[in-house]
Length: 158
Length: 104
Image (tube, rainbow over all chains, first blue to last red; front, top):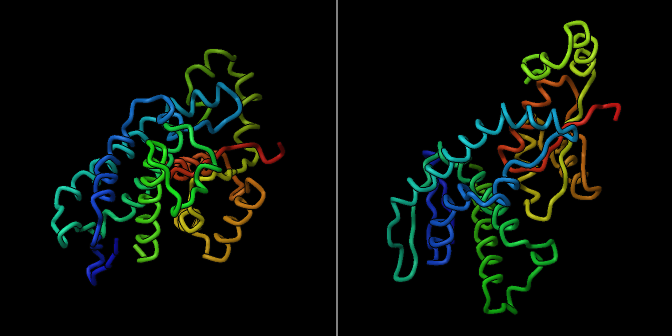
């Protein structure tokens, strides 16, 4: 996977493997997951005091949920312009105005996957050269994919 | 968000009590605290501190390292309303952030 920033500020994501594209395609559903673990991970407690926390949630949670939904829609929309980029890879464009939403959406995806699959810090230290063929490894690989694209977008100065 | 705006707070207390109970919490300084997690890339944390607080990169990186090495860092201190606005922005970018009174 490569990220190329155009003069316009738009970003081209190139040579994205099927795993990358499949992972990104799932990103909106992870952000919008109804699972309580996902909602709790995306909207964690802010105050120790239960009354203050309840007020905070009452006023702020709907705004944040709206923000997360808008990012999920941006990801869906940009992936709608997927194009072949070689025999086994794909490319798509992230408009300059969408880059920050993408970076935050990738973060949301990592947070949700971590909590949905009850992962630990030790799980994230896995060895890419010694992968197990199981569901947990696929989740860890998806987290790597999201982190890699996030890192590339940040490095590109988006 | 103001506590005074809450109908619940007003219903529970007389006007006088509300004044004495709520105004100190609005007036005293609040800490915005960011907590470490195993998920977030360091470069992302630095970028978020620069965007949200307008910190220059060296200061943002310094705070990021404090979070990483000690488990948490007070990244801003001040009035409750701006503190809540900052926490909203941090949580909107999926960092673990909480609020506490500065004298806690």
